[in-house]
Length: 177
Length: 338
Ligand SMILES: Cc1cc2nc3c(=O)[nH]c(=O)nc-3n(C[C@H](O)[C@H](O)[C@H](O)COP(=O)(O)OP(=O)(O)OC[C@H]3O[C@@H](n4cnc5c(N)ncnc54)[C@H](O)[C@@H]3O)c2cc1C
Ligand code: SF4
Ligand code: FES
Ligand code: FES
Image (tube, rainbow over all chains, first blue to last red; front, side):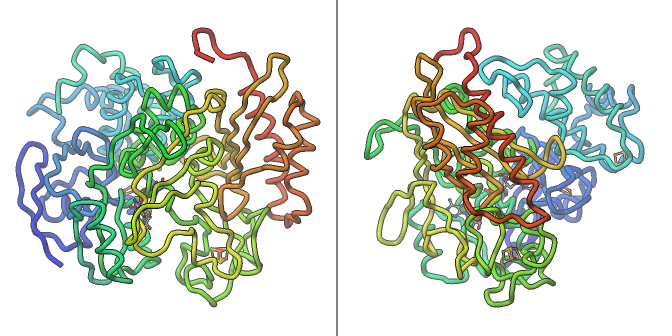
């Protein structure tokens, strides 16, 4: 069954004809041409297909495009302001938070979303006291980023990059997307 | 994947009517389990009735049939429920169970209703090339003689030894939650403890819900017993993995440190979240020291006969239950309301 869905991707509106079975990931990559989100496992297990959907980090491989008519999607591509990198992207560069780069767009989107969640005071599995605002310790960052796997093992750089981006929180963070 | 029709229901009644009228139709929540099953060929519906945009994303106090409750719409996302201030302060076991499940991304997508109705992670159930009575009734159970590390300790049958995967469901059993269900004949309420079935000779039926019955909400009774509650989950890696075993406890402490009242539920041990009533009976009115907790766990296990692959779960249950009880009987943090 074919349907047209409207997706706003990195600021541009697209009317996309999709089959009911088309995932949001396939619609983005193959119809819209937004290839920043990567197809890793295709089963929700690796995080490489992560985008910001209506402002929150979201997988696209387990989402059907038809169910997301009207969605606003920001991919890792859309985070930069022209040639000016988003602070999280810059931090990944500064700390060599990537190797092959396959997981990187998902990692970057996930960090942006995760910093927002932490700023809202959301707790995580390792937060000791659910009733106080958690500090973004390394343990907190690791837990919150555990949905993004990196087979090259660039975790040390990603952790350092996230720490740097979290430090900028409040100043330039949250300016984009 | 076969051809599929997609329908977005305008309201709950329309969704119920659409699925009831078509035996090959099914509800679509966040899709994190169902879309995976469509890809794997485990689920083969011809029509998806999307219930993820019904106006069921509210959390708030309400009047239940037997007193005040916190009412959680079935469409509430797992991350929003875990972040809710009332859930964090009054039902910490529920918040902790949600935060222990899946990943940040998946929790934004997964819904309360879909989480409870997610299907087993038995490796054979997920592999369509192997026999499995739950996926294809009468085909046999590959886990009986196969890889048995995840197998149930309690309530299993000759036809299925799989365990239920939801962390949230285990916590909800410990806080006496009730699901509100809408069917073609109207509304009914089912305690979460009675929602899932033991496999018996029909492992293909996970729950007591009939085809077309929609979960519209979950209600948590407002009792003081749940403030001292927690959820302990053990798994193969520190995060982003399903439970090997898990424990939800809620207790009321007497002045002298004895357990005036308590509820214990276990995950990873049965086809449903397991309410450990025999263990509770042994612990009620006593101080839960390590030896007593061990006796209580063993009393609940009764004559369960684990195999060589899953015997480790017994030791894990003793440890996790002791840990959970130690957490909830410790003095509350300064400033926290008791
Ligand atoms: C990689 C990965 C790791 C995970 N780890 C964990 C974990 O550690 N712990 C855990 O608990 N879960 C875990 N999950 C499972 C996840 O939590 C569930 O898939 C999710 O909660 C299901 O919710 P959903 O809204 O996406 O449901 P869907 O996939 O949309 O639906 C699931 C089922 O429920 C039915 N359904 C949905 N809504 C309703 C309703 N309102 N009424 C009646 N029927 C309904 C659907 O028909 C379907 O059969 C994991 C998932 C993945 C992919
Ligand atoms: S344990 Fe149950 S789900 Fe697993 S193979 Fe056997 S019948 Fe299927
Ligand atoms: S491709 Fe979506 S999580 Fe792996
Ligand atoms: S950089 Fe290669 S997978 Fe992460």
